Length: 126
Image: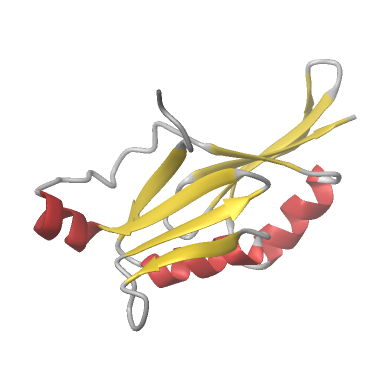
């Protein structure tokens, strides 16, 4: 049986991406190596696990070939104020992918990009 699902983003700027998600309220629970420049970190927010792995390490250590040109997934973050969070994050330098707007009868949604360009949907119940 599987357990503890996690999504991992590959990054060429792991410390920058880690600091971005720490600023969103994630907590770091693992880093390798434990000291110095990390090649892998794991973050958690309300039971959701997010890994960030260094691209060069994935190639060298595991023989993987992560392709950072496509973004076929997004991270969804529920919040209390989509407009306020969107304004705060874009003012801090996040790229706007879709400005806040109403969707369906009960949601307010927007999209930004993290420092690596991964889409993040900000969503609230209205």
